[in-house]
Image 1 (cartoon, chains in turn yellow, orange):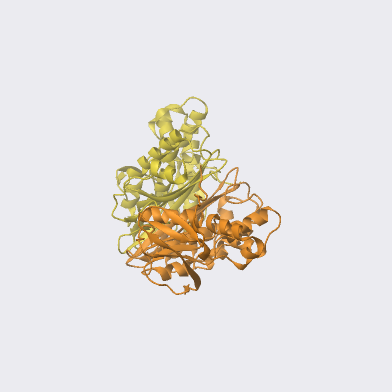
Image 2 (image 1 turned 90 degrees about the vertical axis):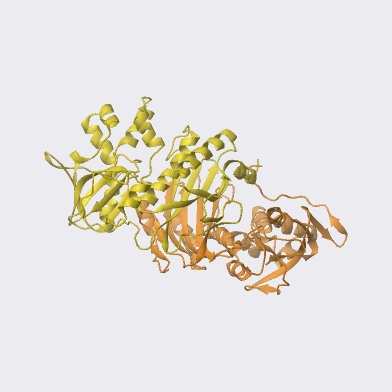
Length: 308
Length: 308
């Protein structure tokens, strides 16, 4: 099976999007953005042995590679449209490719995203790099840098599930709900779009709530007080771990792909179909202070950083 | 050095392009395409041990990773604008990164392309995936599929140099000109833009002239007669190899990144600052026939295909 045949068999689907003038099969893809919009583009790479275990189900890998990028588009308030795939694989295994492609297309189809191009190469390890491009109203993309003192900090859904799910899987005692939160993360695309015009800064929680909120604060040159007892945790997380562990996962666990954002408005308890929770307040200064009923909690965690 | 610091030190340059609303440092990049244009996007991955030797100069690798993508944009007739980088590296070696970034930015700066985002990860091998997005007049992108019988087939510059250069390097007897043609390919961006409206099909020569012309013919459902004695070869290639070897490199050597295209017009000897040579004719049917003064030449070469 040569590269051409591989792409035809596993990755080409009928292009139904009017915005795709020329999809897979030429030197590049030709795309037509809606008039008067900005475009927003994101890229994320998953490396075997670093971001996913060697024995991951290929369908989950394909799904996840798309979902983590959709999450970045969500954090910009964008509408995802087009996707390219740079796939490095160790061998041309048909059942693996078929599963991988199905997961990839499942995640993309949930948001009407079309695979418009890519590059498939051979290598000693599996590396999956997905890029998604979409559009957003001109000048209205959600950035990390707009938070100001006095605003409320919100987070969507629940945090800590994915890291807890991974830990339980690694220990051989998986919890179905928590595993799915790691393997099949839900990108908060509709929420992100609903937040345009209502929030002043946003980021997605990929490294950890503590680390990613820290990046938002740094980009906005502000600090924050975080109310640890307000962090939303799932029933499953509560059932599997004690309170101290719940807090550790909620603050420092990565891979949740929830959105964290700041607003000067009182937002309703649900936005864009997702629960949102007020968890703290933006402050002057440059510190991220954690507190609970006992007072200030000394917490240090920079989340997952490559190359430390 | 964490990922944030690595990106700041080696990859962030001042964004001077008005089309870049938000560059590196947020969840995604926000870009503003010129009104009324289509956008064109390409991606190409270079894998250590497959597309480049382990001991390649990092600056050449950075340059090459950009140039091969610029070539795809050129083959679409597009104007390259924005670039993202998905870089997997084995270790965070500062001198390697500094060289790599300089080569990457050199190639990008030649065409005013701005690095707007990316992802840097750790892995067991080096994998470089570059994506470039640009614009092209609405509906006027050059595709592979527009060739019709009777048109003239052209190729730009000279062919065979890069593969010959690589072979001489591997043999320990490098030729400076031919090595540079492999290590620092020139993407024919101005040529591609000049061809819009003048040619009916175009492709860039990355696998080999024979293989890539074959893809163009397949996409257009036509055949061709190729005049082997008209293939443009460089003085350096002539100096290093006999006629039979020159022909082998010109037809089957990859990595030249020249453009091959078909037109019903008689084009001048130079277009967009580059020599172009008429090398054959599009025919009805589905065969690529090679001929020289002795008559039909039986030539079989499918070029470089992954996963064969």
